[in-house]
Length: 331
Ligand code: TXA
Ligand code: MG
Image (cartoon, rainbow, N blue to C red; front, side, top):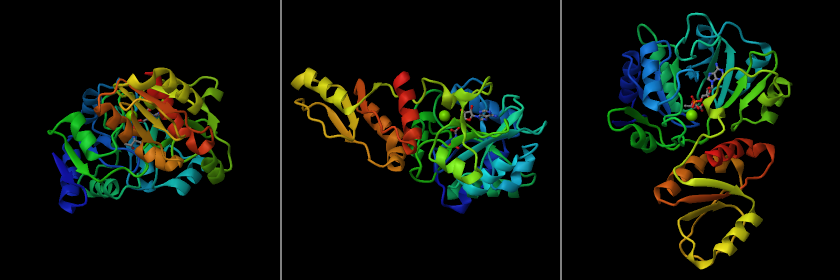
């Protein structure tokens, strides 16, 4: 059932459903989440079951404000606090050392916990309502509300299509960011970028004065992040990344009879085939992120067999979009 997330009664009903151990489709500014009470292990187990996600892939715990950090994290290093101060509420997840009894199933028993305070007004209203319950729900675990390995949802309709009418979904409109939060591991004495997103490396360095390491620069990277598996965000169609020149040559070779192909590109391309679907990718990285997953879903829904995508620019602001496209292409 999809309810209007802007209605206070819907928000209250959603908070109470979470407190009863039920799942909720929750809008955030990045993507929609499949939410459950972070400290209810049975409810969290339902998330893993519904997604078909391995239970050793830890979930992000969403909190209403930075005061709730003390419910989940043992300590907050100075640079992590600086990142929180700079970017919360917003599309930043920090990995912190976990308090022993907190969010056990959500974290797959790892000694760290991922925390995020979302900026979306509906997400915030739900998390605040959860805190006001007796007893309070302090944290809400929410992975992206898609089946494991599939494209993340950016509208309430995407979530309903994926999980059916039994799931309560709050409609908070289309997500403004469109790709998942930037994840920074803060348990290693240095910021380590686990997943790129709208908050860039440069933003992180500006906020805390430390250049974030890439996970490849670490000696042994243990925590799993399914958003970091190579093949992820996969539509049904096969995705290929090519630069504009490669795309044009491929189109020239195919000629007028080519069909079942969709193009998602920025550079002007010409094709003799009337059957090829063309979509223009925005020239701005934030705009491209906003529509990326929705476009992949739309093209998939047309039944094309191939989605040919122009490789995005290599500049730092495109890192999040580039990352998602590479994973979609690896599937
Ligand atoms: O924008 C987002 O982050 C969205 C919205 C709903 O908030 N959520 C999201 O969740 O993308 P999910 O589960 O699809 O991705 C969470 C990522 C996973 O790759 C997970 O492994 C990683 O965060 N993660 C969570 N806790 C972690 C931990 N303690 N250590 C390392 N990675 C962690
Ligand atoms: Mg996901």
